[in-house]
Length: 458
Image 1: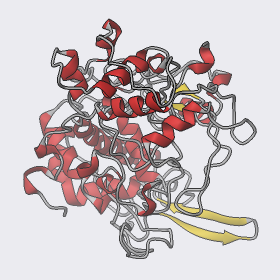
Image 2: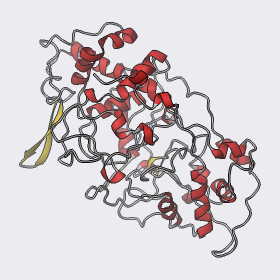
Image 3: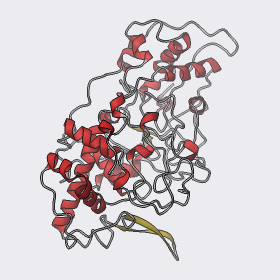
Image 4: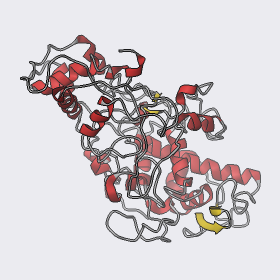
């Protein structure tokens, strides 16, 4: 069938299969366990050591990061008018301190966003342009974001803090909040903090003053930001040594959040029990789906390994459609732009704020990365409220149908699609969806899905 059938990525599923049989016939009996499936068995071992983060596996940092994950006090004001206080929103436009990591990575829902209106893209300070990625098993990834924009979990967290669509905060505000709210916890891990209460060196920002505000100009809307590089104001006016101190505190804050996120695992599924010899763990349809996954469908070409992802980037030819009523992620070049931006990022893991280089950044940007997005893991995904990086497909049945027709015609998305039409039978499509449902595990331990020890936010 060729490389064009390498079904991968911007989707939670890239599976399909060509097989014999016709609609209306009695479904065939499940095949015997193919030995190639053993490579997909869940690996409960911890992720590799992260050389960029010396506290990544520190239990004290882990508990502290868990508390910060649920704490909205590091966020600035809400910008989007759709934040009107109604169900699914985090507050009212202009309110500050409303967004936490847990607001879009909902622990009770497997760390995906089931909160935001429409259950597609996320509504933080503003609407995001892409679906919020799942955090389960994320510590095994070499690059982060749908487009590979970050090469560490802590770098990704800083990006979220300073993103005006998510936290709408800034490193100056984050650092001073950490000083006022968590000084003892921070210093227990990283040593003495700089004197962030000295307003002559570190300008004081209220929560409402942090981050960005939208300003209308003759050429359209723009953003004026405070407390981050390029603001032309509070941060840029500080001495270089004080800028460095603020950045280091914010980075260290993100590093303790990573220590918590590394613990978030899906766990073994019924599929793994079946691989271990439990013949009753999968029904006949799920077993046929497993065989299709590694066989004619060639899903395993991209969804490989214990988490069913090659952690690479692929173009599946998706024409973006409106989500959350009015938002379309048009002309998104994906990894081609994300990895280029990563190479220029002072917070990459080869930089001054890292404890060591992860060596994950590609040396060049291959043309195939235009319009390509990260292959998502397939474990614990059956209850996700939407799929694809755009969140425009609502069910796994729709995702399978998308791949069955070979994606969308060219002309409305960047790059070149890797898909071609498959012509699956209804039984095959149903079997693939059934198999994906058998990949759900128990999720993280109960003591991880709430603030530690019943702690409350400051």
